[in-house]
Length: 498
Image 1 (spheres, helix red, strand yellow):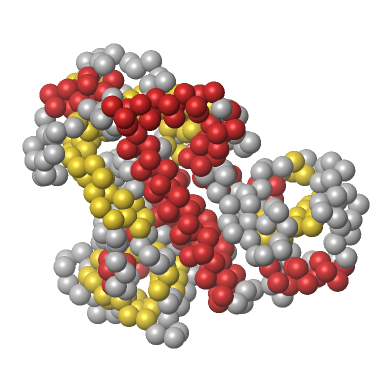
Image 2 (cartoon, helix red, strand yellow; image 1 turned 30 degrees about the vertical axis):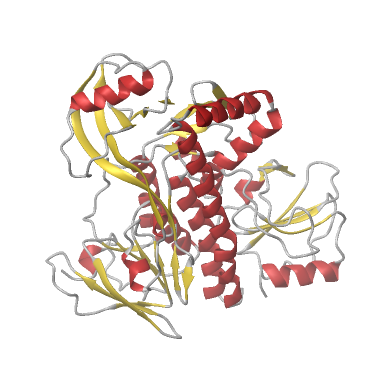
């Protein structure tokens, strides 16, 4: 099978040589590859599976920060149309985390199967011109000062004659990442929950809530609708610690659901059932030379809080614009070091928060149950703490470290503010651009020649802050008063490039 027969492109014009190789066509890889292609970077996405979208995914939740990233790409409305909104998250049977209080246009949780997200991201990547290599497994990796070479195996199990070569490679190929193993990175951590069960079932009785989740120390269960008449059940029972390959029957699924939720909802007609174990692991480095890791290849954690797919997508949103800026000569290679500096702490924070939630949910001893009850009561009565929890889980509060002496807004996420002329900030970010927001009436010196990567906007209010927003929606630079022409030219040269 030739290279072109495994690509979604039909044009007879030869594809340009890739400058980036992305390995793994899950949500993280699809978003990253699409971003790069739309930025004019030739990219090849390598996937060992055949060309299909699986409906066996475990992820069912999109949080506000991820939806904001999708909004900055013009695809949030398409994805919202495939899911159902939820205004609050229930924890431990007594705590309700209100999401309608979030400072975001997307002040809700979106219940949507991962495969629906992948459909939208796949279409976007194909339309952007990403070259796909399906049925292609990475078997080796070598890098030098100029680039990365991948050796791959084709669909028949044979070694491909021509290795793949690019200036950079990104492993988005999941927990068992071939890319991570090839660069010799460890994946320290441990299995936290063994013998988690998955099942796609019909229900004879509909749950009261769109997303149903509870834990009582002996069991937990989660129910979410597919939208096609089936529900995905994820559950665990204390004392049922068996291998992932152990047989699983509908009676066991129903029993776990009854223990955790008080009712099995008359489950029937299981079309698929399986087991897995949930790990907490994080690679010590997200970059080795010209090779990067993102998504589950870099970090895995428990399903608690629904943060897995979201964290990977946010990795991609951070890395894509930086790779494009370096490859186009708008920034030096040092910009790529900030990927590790910014995203590794976020991955670590997600490990802590998801791990804390699941450990409280599994609390068995009297003192741990008392701790959970006390914490729940505190959060229920303390609005700031509850909002901080919501900000952590939804990604709204994730901020990146700023240099010493930088403005207080530097590194922080910028909300989707209204701008002069009836536009919004996240609309202005589309196209992978920086956005310079100026006080009303201020001139825009130093922007000539950067129109392809910089949008200039003005506040609708009398606000006097000058703000430079990165393509991922975080503040690159800010000042509390209008900047001089010379200062603004220097700032733009530093961040947006010459």
